[in-house]
Image 1 (cartoon, rainbow, N blue to C red):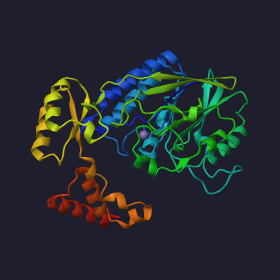
Image 2 (image 1 turned 90 degrees about the horizontal axis):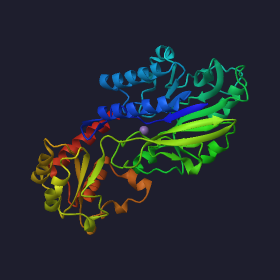
Image 3 (image 1 turned 30 degrees about the horizontal axis):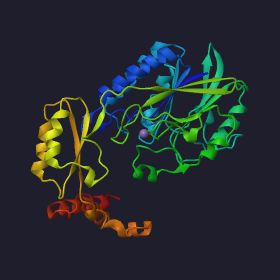
Amino acid sequence: MKVLHTSDWHIGQIFHNYSREEEHKYFFEQLKSIVIKEKPDVMVVSGDVFHTATPTIVSQRLYYNFIVDLSHLDDDLQIVITSGNHDSPSRLEAPRPLWEAFNVSVVGMLDYHTDSDDSDLNFDASKIEIPITRNGEIIGWVLAVPYMNGNANIYDSLLNHLKKRQEYADNQSIVAMGHLAVRSADITGHSEDIIGKLETLDVQDFTEVKGVDYWAFGHIHFPQAIKGIEDMRYAGSPFPISFNENYQHSVVSVKIEDSKTETTVIPLKTLIPIVDFPSKPKGYDDALPYETVMMQLIEILNDRAYVRVHVQTDKPLTQAETAAMVQAFEGQNAMFCGIQSYFPEKLEGDDIQDVKTLRELKSKSPFELGCSVYLKKNGSEMPDELKEMFKKVCEEAESLS
Ligand SMILES: [Mn+2]
């Protein structure tokens, strides 16, 4: 069985006010060429199809057009799509019956039931056990597990259930999908707050599950064989979703034959590069002052790129300075994506250093925390006017929760 593994498309993302539509089209063109060349039996998309739970019409059109286009390429191509934490499970799944006509299986969520059948599963397993056929014969299965609170036991139960099915035979390949964070995975490019919120699973939770030929994971955007295990991979995002994702993006081609799994990482081209200008400094000493950076901007303005500017400064930039920087990008190919300021060391970390434990953190109000983060980032107290506005927002948010 041949599988093409991709994930974390994040269709509809707005990156520093810029639409990614053209980049998604560029990725889809590449993916189409890869499908033509690799001829997979099935393409699996392991979650985060859309960037938001309520994608715009433009985003949905992009998605529908591409999937339909792809399925027209080859009548035998199957596509399995599962939801990620960014997707709306029900919205993704709504056109499920229509998708079936295109050989596309979409699983947004598990269908739970209360009365038990003879398995130890309390949801409809047959919905997420997708048979993969070639010339009318089942050659393998995709266990299309959508995003949910992490629990690796589900895979054992699913395998037990699958093996009891009449259509199941020993020589069929099995691919398991999941949208989750595996502990000890390389989280390059992910900010800590993302990982902190995730329930994570141990890699052993999966290696102990016997009978899966390939694990097709989504969620972590850095492509990798988890802990070097070749048949357990994150496909990663198709192009940078954030400034931290400045690395080679790819999809994975998987060949399973006689229970042996061979994987090939297929690199993708990025249409619009992300650039840290003049470069990403280690700290204050390493950065260049505002005036110098402004003068050097000319080097980059003509390039089509997302540009984040880094400046060394002793005090927060004035509004006029920031405005002048923004102005410099106007009408140019380069796209302004913010300024990062670097202050002298002594100003950093005096304030929230005292917050060492979770309990201490919890004892601070969002307003207090926001003020100390501002102080840490800018080296000066938040201006009164901003404080007022921030306080109001905090109060409004608290009244909602
Ligand atoms: Mn994602």
